[in-house]
Amino acid sequence: MQRCDIILQDGTVIDGTGATAQRADVAMEGGRILHVGDCSEIKADEVIDASGQVIAPGFIDVHTHDDWALLATPDMAFKVTQGVTSVVAGNCGISAAPFSAKGDLPAPFDVIPGISAGRFDTVEAYASAVTEARPAVNVRLLAGHSSLRASVMGADLERAATESEINAMRDALELALRQGAAGLSSGLDYPAALSAPMEEMIELAGVLKGHDRAVYTSHMRDESDTVIASVRETLETGQRSGARVVISHHKCAGKANFGKSVETLKLIDAARCGHEVALDVYPYVASSTSLIERFLPSAEDIKVIWSTPHPEQDGRMLNEIAADWGVSREMAVTRLQPAGAIYFDMDEGDLQRIMQHPAAMIGSDGLPGVDKPHPRLWGTFPRVLGRYVRELKLLELTQAIHKMTGLSATQFGMIDRGVVRAGCIADLVIFDPDQVADMADFDHPTRPSRGISHVMVNGALALADGQQTTTRAGAFLS
Ligand code: ZN
Ligand code: CU
Image (cartoon, rainbow, N blue to C red; front, side, top):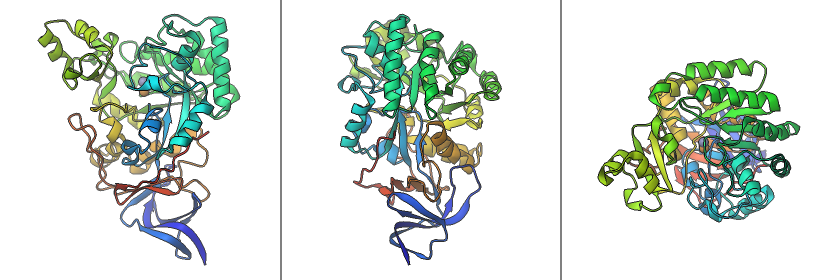
């Protein structure tokens, strides 16, 4: 009789490709999937009963800022408890590598507390730090445009890069890709990159062309009043550079822009006829980032979640803080710097329309390292499965899983992951489709989700019977 390490018995397998569910067992051996189907002829060291539950590929969080959390809090509880087995880090232009800048830097470098402690000259150095930390989930790293800029230009970022600076960034990006980076990310909405013209991005994204799996992801120049122009710019950057494009956390922020996703998605569809374009989205109508005066017009309600000089204001609304101090909102923002906030700035209709788009993947954009984060950090994936699949029936379960696994692995060049198929790596999740739900909300943002029972990373159990194990089997994915 054939033997294997683990058999997941009698589950409903949703394989991540978007195909219909099938009743099956899944056998695993040596970190890979050995067989999907009837496994009664195989003897396993361990059998896990999956009856009444779904067996799916482990979720891939394509939009994270976990570069530093993977090293500082390698148990990654906020990801494992959601069924996430891999994260894409280095989004929005900020990555831990290549990042050789010294000293203080402008937003968004302040978005992650503790970022200054970990700057890695090369992707190779970051990969070794990951290997040493042994995080519970896998990581694929994007090289951040703002990190490249700061490495080459120092703190002098509020201008276009010169020809020789662009060449230095291109060399650093080329090396990063050869050392296993997934592509290039940008954060053109922030002071660190706002002055970079489209031409600078086209020249940099051009480096990706020589690397089949590489992708250009963009937190666009604006996500509010000029969101349509920003989508055009991003698509043009992809077309002219030849790079595949992923539009990050797509949204139309600010009341005046509600409904504009009809047009942005039309533009994306038109571009998709000739060029590969995808997007990511998180299931909330509030965003979160640095507290910046530029972003004030897009939201009436803004919750301050941290402030270095005024920690006593954490968790309070900006309007209340300004009223208490007898100053304008702008003045309050200046006094609170550096600070982070949650902006209640989106429309549910846009969110649903974007999530339903066939090229939309799920990415949390969660910001770890603060006491009261946006609940997306702990709740994104179960929220899609509970609220948007089971309750609102916005998506079929197979479709939602595809947006969290198969589609994501293809877009981010992850080999042998994101699908349940013999020969693929055993990154898997088992959950109860009738129970799965996010428990984190704006008042209790770090409550773990429910309904996820088992998580396997590279064939090892990271979560068993709903409890996190001490095994940390994640790896740097090149
Ligand atoms: Zn962003
Ligand atoms: Cu982001």
